[in-house]
Amino acid sequence: MSWDWFWAPEYAPARFVVRRLLALCYAMGFLCVINQFPALLGTNGLTPAPRFLRAMSFRRAPSLFHAHYSDRFVVGCGWFGLLLSAAAFLGLTDSLPLWASMAVWFVLWVLYLSIVNIGRIWYSFGWESLLLEAGFLAVFLGPAHTEPPVLVIWLLCWLLFRVEFGAGLIKMRGDPAWRNLTALHHHHETQPMPGPLSRVFHHLPGPLHRVEVLANHFTQLVVPFGLFAPQPVATTAAVIMIVTQGWLMLSGNFAWLNLITITLAFAAMDTTLLGWVPVGALTPGSAAGTATPLWHRAAVLALTVLMVVLSYWPVRNLLGRAQVMNRSFNKLHLANTYGAFGSVTRVRFEVVLEGRGAEDEQWYEYGFRGKPGEVTRRSPQVAPYHLRLDWLMWFVAISPSYGRGWLERLVVAMLRDERRILSLLRHNPFPHAPPRHVRVRLFRYRFSTPTERRESGAWWVRTPVSELIPAVSLDEVTPDD
Image (cartoon, rainbow, N blue to C red):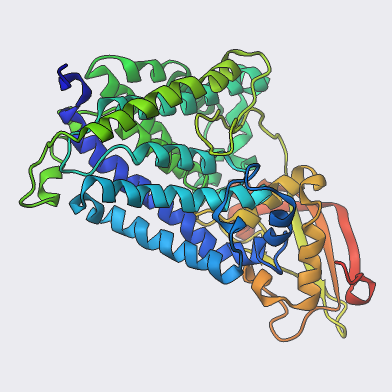
């Protein structure tokens, strides 16, 4: 039997781009582990992972850390993952034999899976599962000196289809604001993590907001079908998605969601646009376009069958009336369902934490790295990096129940001056001694108008709403807190 159908040499440049951008996404994930995991999930973190590991079996949460856990070991895994990601980004894995290149990508997947499966609420975002599913498929793409398997290219396109089409459906089903084209009258202001240009986008004319929504519907509900059309239609569909994702990157901070979606879009491009990519230059002296051995072909066929079978659950979810978004149907995070912003909040609320010293009646605000706080501070560009605490604070502002079990712990950390946890913040108003009291307040925020901006220099205008946690001192904290 001829295997000519199995190979897609015209997608070698696409593989080059996909694997490098995917390595960059992995790097962002492991950098978050290094910088944030000990404070969020470490032994003395906000929600300690060791407690979870003691209560959860390996079968229910597959993770290397069932065998051994320590904060240092997790951070070490983060550094190892970051090192492997950098090697993959630089193309060093392309000079390896097929089995070794696959091993590197498999280790990346296992490491990140191990972290996500014990990360609980801090790792419950859709882009975690998206990175894992894309990363697992990338294991089978092969290095640059081999022919790209067409089945894996199709599986990457199928993943992108579910990401975009699922997001489009959940919008149309979930909130009338998407159907009447008014969603972006609110979204730029109320999204979880505004960026430096979000205020500009918010103040665009109303008719342009409607055009944005229409363009979004077209990109997510119509264009995805073009991914499976002959070239150059598939490439055109991919370009439209990339432009749309670039627009989203400019208008807000969504961790690596936009970057990884762009990454997947490149999988649909052949040499029509990517012919300039110097894939052969990466492996001097090697035979570019070598067919892979039979064991690899068998593995790709097995992967395809597995993904077809597992796709039953996300397809059923897409077609069902009770569609959910960002759901994993198995603990390996393969063949997931995706979606974003099925509902749009109309009003922005923010949680503000304040402290007061023993000899001072004035309250001083703690500053977060990404989320809105000080009204004169412009929202920074954070993505593709992910500030997990800042994102969860947005959910707490919508419903305080999201902070159950860790918001009080954050208050205690401020009272005890626990520097590891406070390192998650941008500004600690008590650098020399902890505050006597800490309180948690809820404010309503809105972007300042152009006139207000000129007169006061304020980026935001805020008004107090309520007190989530009244002033508390360390004397009132129980030992278990």
